[in-house]
Image (tube, rainbow, N blue to C red; front, side, top):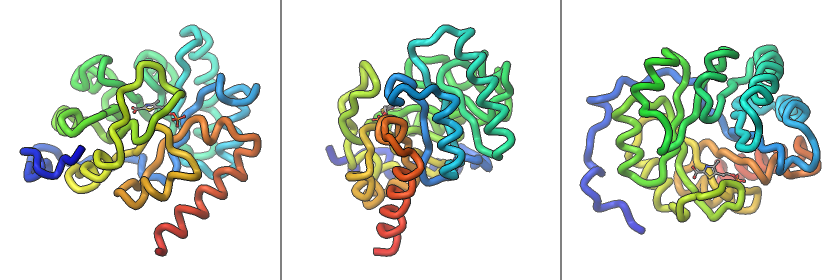
Amino acid sequence: KVYENIRYSSYNLEKEFQKRDVAIDTDIYCITGEEFSLGRDNLSVVKELIDADIKVIQYREKNKSKSEKLKECTEIKQITDKAGVTFIINDDVDIAMAIKADGIHIGQGDMPISEVRRLVGKRIIGVSTHNPDQAMKAVRDGADYIGVGPVFETKTKSNVEASAGLDYIKWVSENITIPYVAIGGINEENILLVQRNGGKSFAMISDIVGSKDIKHKIKSIRAKLNIGEMS
Ligand code: 3NM
């Protein structure tokens, strides 16, 4: 897939969108997933992430009840607040509001962005996108940042779209003016490839929460990213 010639490439987004100051610029954006966490619960994983100096954490749980999620998010919010870490909730706008989360992340099938904005006010809104059309629409509709993926094949998300590949992240890096986060199948082995194709922030689940030593994993990913920046 080559997106270079598509009609949007000369589209001037700045005219339509006033860039917001978003606390989302980070190197590694960690997402929870208890079923991949080697028996550890989300709370202890979050503590390890904070200990490893992760600055943005998203709570994502597809198999828990609303009340379980609310309880967990309430506890996590106390820790992230103390640590000055940005805490984003996946999908559940009501939980995000109840715990005063920093932001909400929604997918393509969820509520329209305008409706979410009406509910969450100035909180961060992130939107998953899988192609340039969706990226352009999310920007026009007022997303604060977009997810860009799946870059590679992933087993973590069910019903995931076919992988969007490195061309899509490259297109976003050249055409989109709001923060963006690469996602989907990213790991320590392939992260440099994503960086070389325009990736700046990298959202990861399984390679991080699924590693025995989370702190060590993050340290070695960061070492790779630093080398990539220098070369
Ligand atoms: N969203 P892992 S891919 C939650 O493309 C999610 O929007 C995706 O998990 C998207 O790092 C994905 O284990 C799963 O591949 C990411």
